[in-house]
Amino acid sequence: MTTNEKVFISPGRYVQGEGVIARAGHYVSNLGQSALLIADDVVWKIAGEALSKSLEGDNVRFERAVFEGEASSREIDRLVKLGQKQKAEVVIGFGGGKAIDTAKGVAEKLEAACAVLPTTASTDAPTSALSVIYSDDGEFESYRFYTKNPDLVLVDTGIICKAPPRFLASGIADALATWVEARAAIRANANNMAGGKATLLGATIGEKCEEVLFEHALLAYQANQAQIVTPSFEAVVEANTLLSGLGFESGGLAGAHAIHNGFTALHGDIHDMTHGEKVAFGTVAQLILDQTPQAELEEYLDLYLALGLPVTLKALKLEDVSDEDLYRVAEAALKEGESSHNLAYELKPQQVVSAIKAVDVHARAFMEKVGLSE
View: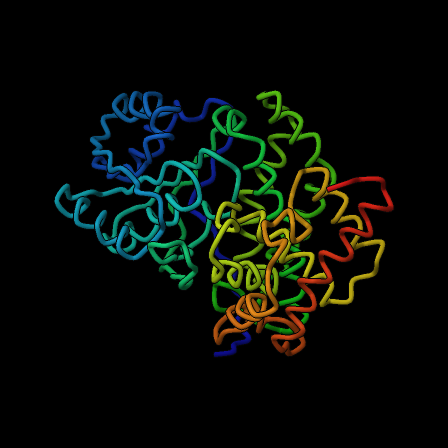
């Protein structure tokens, strides 16, 4: 359905800073007194004690449910039953993108408030009113849209700076896709993820996101390697989480995420790659399809390589990929309802296959030019 309505959506409250987990109880208690807290064992070991103390300090009763690792329909349904038994007023998603997407799905079904506490800045999942749903085996199934965005997004940069730098780099890659895709969707007069056209604010946020990343990404990455919070680190965490989240949802998705979704149809070592790492490759593929000038394309390649992101088939663990498998990726990326249809031009599978191969060709040529080896 096409519409001329402009739509902008956002979370109810966004809080970011070093040590803000100590204020989690204060913010969550405004949403309800009984919480279902979804977190895996790794995350719980890192910061579970600090979160528990804060919630208990503000008289929020909670039951922790162990997240089993996949944002699937089965996992959401399993956790909904626990929430119903507990009569949860708030669902807290504590962890990475998949735990957060699962918590949003549970909150929607329970008609409960939703609080999101990311422990990495690896995706823009925290702020959005949708989840990316996978099969239990990790294959992309669908986007699931919700009636509202999370009520609270609380981002403790003191916790996030302790996460492996690979996660921050993945978030930067996911966030760098924001303006590339949003401007393409706007050019094509396509609907955004909120079901309307981009507002001026939605577009501006996407553009600002890219600007912040090109200015601060490397400095933030170095700070993360040293596990310290700096102004550049704060800026990039905000770009990865808030600017990218608002920018993709109220701006629109296009080719980069569709190609990412196509990659999930493959089996093998590519499943060891993060969401953002696959999006990085998809972004370069879309830039090629968009006929981006060489100088601009190389700015992206330069930053991706500096952050250790995969821009060759070998780095993406697809060194020996067959044409048949690339066709599977292309067909999945062009399925009905996919965001690839938000481009101003129609694509055929062969064009997507050629773009994926071209990413590898152009990245290798650039690496040779600047004296880098794989």
